[in-house]
Length: 204
Image 1 (cartoon, rainbow, N blue to C red):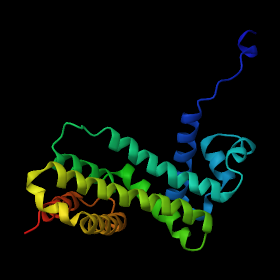
Image 2 (cartoon, rainbow, N blue to C red):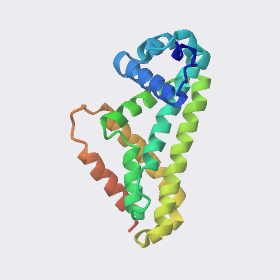
Image 3 (cartoon, helix red, strand yellow):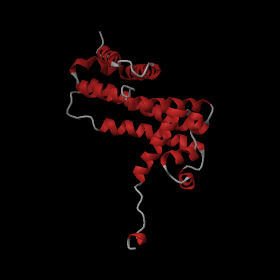
Image 4 (cartoon, helix red, strand yellow):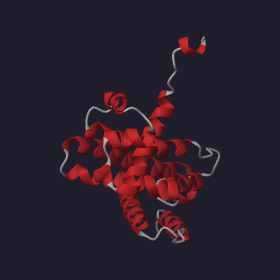
């Protein structure tokens, strides 16, 4: 009897994760066209009306999925050991930005599926541009880290803007290739290419 009088506490962070996970499962299994508040609510075991209060429109739900994917990447980046050498830290960070695991591959598939809507959907364009700018800034920070803290990259200081753009383009291309590769393909070659690209930043 006493328990019935206690209000149910809601872990909002856990609920956000549950909603995002349900949405990604739908995108991965059924495709982007099946992503809806009703389908996500059913997949997550939540009341549709309750979820619709958080996401009144399809665009709200889509933008949330895109932003949550970025949040998960940030969480992994924050777990990287700051005591690593600048080169090791950069390489570890960049690996987290690539779809090298099943988890990160699903995240990338979600981002690419939703990102395609940005060409015709103004609301999604805002969310996609934010993610694009975040990655561009991250590339610049990592290139700066090498230029300022690793003597092997001393000559890089005059090329930071150009090399940051080149790194960004390299990551985009490599990520696209990995997403389209067979799921059982060995991805070690991609890590080797990443290491080679970082080597190239040292200059001649």
